[in-house]
Length: 257
Image (cartoon, rainbow, N blue to C red; front, side):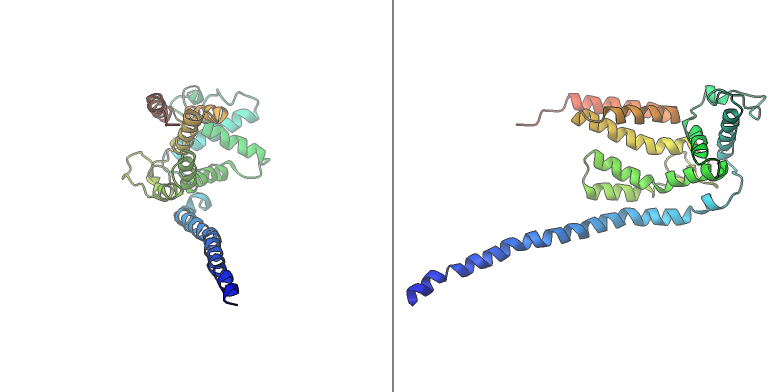
């Protein structure tokens, strides 16, 4: 009997070790879920706040007092040129000075995107509503763009979430930067820069992925080209950024095998 007890005694620690060993596997998924929910809330709460506070940009159909008035004029004129069979990339704008072919000298992808969306919806939504909707979505969705870009550049989820939440907090006192005063109704109405602000992050992330991992040639080409057709100044800034990233990649020390 004592021999039998001695043989059976080591079994208890093994059983307990099995339970202890299985505990982390049971706890880790729940912790990961909680962590993911917290990070999602960090990004979602500022977005929800902005979506509510910026809603009058979409729902109140008041003529713009800033550069958006000119941008919407270009949207209307581009659509009118398309509907009468003229070239929507090269048309005369009589309201500017004594008349001027604005699209020959100015980035016009953001305007044509609204026209394209208008026809894809079979003209059931007005051009002004679509113009305001595009502006609204670009403003509200900016934190998501920042989060995706940072994750694509292999920042940690925590860093990406904090960066995304902070992106909507930039304030520059009407200095023509990323602050929302540059874009909404009481601000400056910098419509093409609003597109460039989002595309700059996306194009930079695609370029980092291409330089570091050799993947995503098409995405890098398309996003870079879109940025050029949205804002030449931001495209110039992007070119400098790419040059710096390229030099860093060239002079990076190889990782030990």
